[in-house]
Amino acid sequence: MQTSGVRSPAIPFIVGLVRATRKLPLIGQAPAEKRLSASARAGEPFWQTLLEMKTDNNRRFFGLFGLDESMVDGKTVLDLGCGYGGNVLAWADRHPSASFVGLEPFPHVMNIAERAGISFGTKNTRFVTGLGETLPFGDNTFDLIVTWDVIEHVRDPMRVMQEITRCLKAGGVSLGVFPPYHNPTAHHLGYATRLPFLHLVFSPDVLVAAVNRLIEAGEVDLSRQPAPQCGPWGRKTLPSLNGTTGADWNELTRQLKSRYAVAVRNTYVPFGERFAVLRIFNRIMLRLFRDSDLFCGQIRTVLHKEG
Ligand SMILES: C[S@@+](CC[C@H](N)C(=O)[O-])C[C@H]1O[C@@H](n2cnc3c(N)ncnc32)[C@H](O)[C@@H]1O
Image (cartoon, rainbow, N blue to C red; front, side):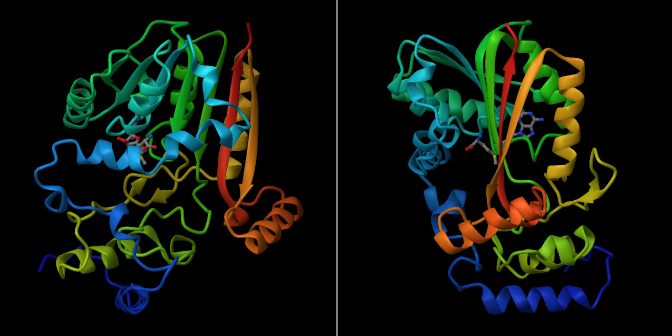
């Protein structure tokens, strides 16, 4: 068995806790459809794209901002961090007068999205491999730029927002949704457990060591997780996350507004939005504790580039 070199009595404690709670609804391992392995979908070349389409996020997205999806009609739209293209292909199918670009850093992911688009007969979407930090587009290219659960993953959120600002046309809009890092489940460990607050109690090194034990034991279907690195805010964070908290985001948007001709509105949505009691409790807490991550499910951010 490989070891990470990190030693702590907390590691077997976390492993035991995860095992004991694995099958519990809401806090156990994420349901099967959210952690489908390649083997489970063998034979379906675009299973990831189809899975993204099936989650129906694309139908909900614009409503999260009180907007109607028809706002994309006739517009040029970038889905930054589009994953396997499920959302952007669904929007393209419903809005043939709009033209879409999906952008992702990983060529193998883009390749699947691209082939899925061809196979579905989608004409108004193209896929581009690239990074949000260095968008491969000219200034003033898009009417609308969307980031759906992407901001928490990028290496340099400020750079991404500057690039979004540059590539938006004057009068253009960017819509983004992401969970702040200190929200109860922003650890993104759902493939093993959805126990809340783990990353607020245990260090990233200890959590990664615990997760790797479960992976090595064959109890979690994932490759070993890399050691946590320092994120853009100078704190160690869990792999694939940058650790942006609500306070970091407030500061970032303050700086963005001071440097560019943009208006930014951030909405802190209560954690557990789907459950009335939790929603009401967290809404009150968000008021009392000034948008603390602890009570926030996601930040919805709207950026207007002045025309
Ligand atoms: C949680 S997924 C969300 C995918 C898709 N937006 C959705 O909602 O289904 C996050 C995506 O952001 C992408 N990503 C990570 N870092 C990025 C960066 N620096 N620039 C652009 N995309 C990035 C990842 O590759 C991944 O596909």
